[in-house]
Length: 258
Image 1 (cartoon, rainbow, N blue to C red):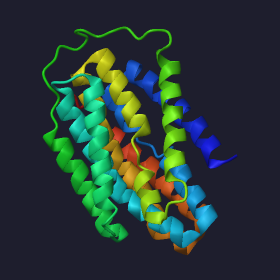
Image 2: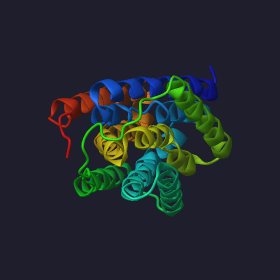
Image 3: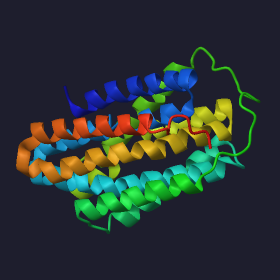
């Protein structure tokens, strides 16, 4: 199966699952779970298989910087969504991701400083972004029957576009673009449109927590790929990601509404 086919299968399927989780368990939990590297993981795996361990390790390191651009997306979306509808918030957030990627394209960093920088960005953003006062359920729109299929199509379309744009890039840009907020964009826009900015904020703050596990995945691949090989590095990274996600979900983050 090609990387495009894999992403076309994983992204829409995972987005539908997290959308259902959001309706059943709330946007905060869905946000945490939505950050599992179901897009970046296959990208980094195929990069390593096609270009070698060193190339793959460098791309994984760049992904840590890419997560800073994704964090900028989250911050700008939340701030703009407080006063503007979702199309404006999404446009501003994507512009922030693009600006962050442009800046990070000039920055090369080792895995440990990259991980620390990413963690600092997640923590600071989570602390600064508060959920606005809003009565839960007020003004919510019931999702229409076509809601989930349209979400899946949106995710698949963004996968195709991103894959076309990123083909032929070096390891640094490949890593930076591997964190493009495909699932984040669709979930945030639909959540704000149907449930308001407060619920979108809860979703995105949950994602900031989930980014810790995402970063742990990228870091583990970056530091282990050259020494233990492709299969070992990705197996280890997957285990680290699952353990990190479990610790986040079990550490009281799930119940956070603030």
